[in-house]
Image (tube, rainbow, N blue to C red; front, side, top):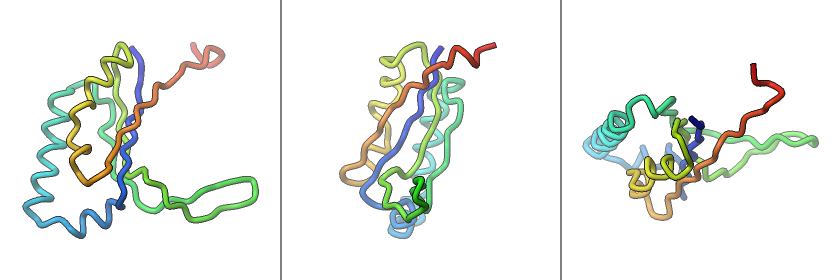
Length: 114
């Protein structure tokens, strides 16, 4: 089984989106997350959380970042194709215009395997 990192990108921050949502819209959004998590069951290793402020760190120092990444989750699946199936109809894609999901496969480090 492989581990896959799901990165959620959006043109607006979570804070902005939450501020725009009515209580009913916010509750409906929570139900979509809960339903998705139930559907995946044990394949959803970590449902993740929304992200707030971003800071870019380089050898020269730190600066604020306008990262479009607004959250993450961690999945377990036998292949990238199966992990893609888990997110292809994800409700995040309808959260706001131009929302995207990036799926990253974790690679094992043989030197660190037990």
